[in-house]
Amino acid sequence: MEISTSGNREVRSDKAAPPSGKARDRARKKALQGQAGRASGRSRALGAARAAGRAGVFALFAVSVLALALIAFRSDAFNLGDVAVNGCRHQDAAKLEEIIRTEFPANILRIDLDAVRRRLEDETWVKRVALRRVLPSTLVVDVTERTPTAIVELGGVQMVADGEGVLLGVYGGGFGKLDSPIFKGFDGDRETYEMYEVNGERVKRGVRMLAGIAKEMPEAARKISEVDLSEDGYAKILMDDSPVEICLGGEDYMARLRSLVYDPERSYRALTEQGYGREQVEQIDLRFKSGIIFRLKRAKPAVG
Image 1 (cartoon, rainbow, N blue to C red):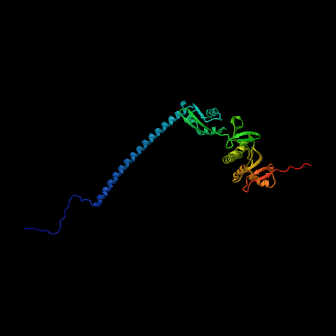
Image 2: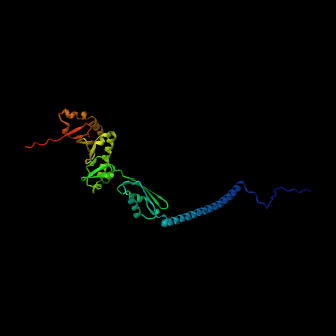
């Protein structure tokens, strides 16, 4: 006999159903994030440890350097020994050495080289100074002296100046023969000369003017005996072979001077055509584009 039933029978099992695909992805992502977080934490800890190590090494190095510097700054081994002064001809080298030894620290490492340079350049003949240390105890001083360039007359006394207008001393045999005319027309005297800034500028202007003439007309430049710089913007010169004052300045005065020196007949033609002689000329003015201007001597009044 067969017995049949209709309907479904529910089958139960204690096993859990396998997760879906999305659930697996979420779980895997979470696991990876956890691993990454743990790795990142370990990396940060390792980086911090390394940074601390480097900081410790640097601090130890800095302390060591500071300790060595303090020892060197106090050590007699670095006390100033030789001072080698080079380049002095007019300047007294022994005086420069004395200044360094008496006005600056004994330890060569404590000497401020810029301060030494500024102090030495205050000396009359010293134009520039370069210094260097040769450890443990030598200081080398390379001096560039000022060059005697012009003879400057101040209150009847002839002084020597360089091309920047700095007075170097009274003109005498110690300077040798200077191939320079006498510069005149300054404010003050030998004691107050430096109080007037314009004096240095006048010397510079005279030196530039003479250099230009010497380049164009060297023979004429050698004949110039005096240069009056009292007026700003131009100069008045005297030549060895003439008592007539010549005014130089303005644009292209060099061409007019060249004409006067190398072609005097042409330069004086207008003067002679008017019936005047060269002996009547007191001043020649070369400052104007219109040409050479002759100023005549004033006639002496008749005595009755």
